[in-house]
Image (cartoon, rainbow, N blue to C red; front, side):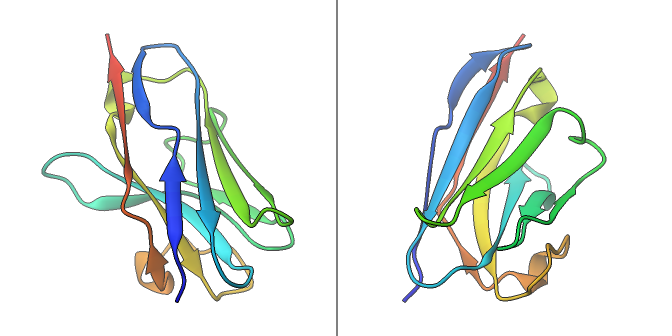
Length: 120
């Protein structure tokens, strides 16, 4: 049974930074971060393979950084220069693919999500 637990969400002001964490149980996976705003689709934001290869959505490239600590089986999403449009529930996901995938259907396991709210 694979379990993903996200943490680090909260309420911040525009321009602030925030770091999300996702701890996974079980073996090492490619880890991804997705976000879902009210009334919208769950969109890909970033992913990192076990070897450290990364992929980013264009909307967050340069502002968000994904990293991982394989010894702790934990992935991180460092978010900088946050904007109100970054407000969403952020979900961690795990994939058996060896390379980071942008596709939601490549991820087999999902966390429950953590809310990030960016005020003006």
